[in-house]
Length: 162
Image (cartoon, rainbow, N blue to C red; front, side, top):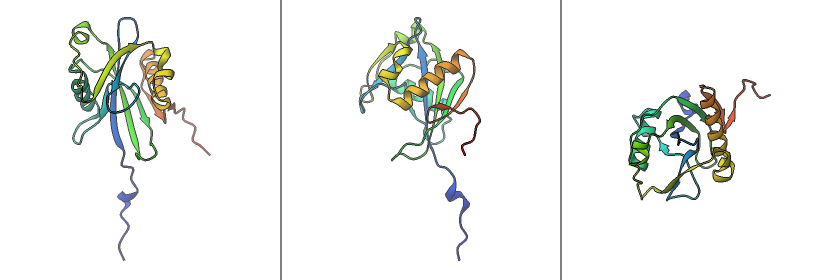
């Protein structure tokens, strides 16, 4: 008889990192991926051997052609998706994107069709619901100089379900 392998029951999540950048007017930077509809944060999946912040830096450089400083973690979101399995998504603070970086943005056409700064109040109309919740939580975390833990984009308040 073969002994069961306890590791088979461990979560094996995909990890992705995004960055929340602002302009001088407080609008957030969103990118329009060329491979899917709608808007998104700059970022993507973390590769083997990378930390989440290293993945964020690499993805921003690949998508936008710039390497601005990346700040503190704003949000960690446990958000499994049907058909995609377990996911752990991070959002880091990119702060106000300085003109020397904004002026040097060069899109990776194979991945990014466009970018624009948007009023944060429009995230519900621009982003899919789970991403909109995550971005709003990241904006809240930034305003509080905090890090928030989310589940499916909802702030976990410490109450376990029945």
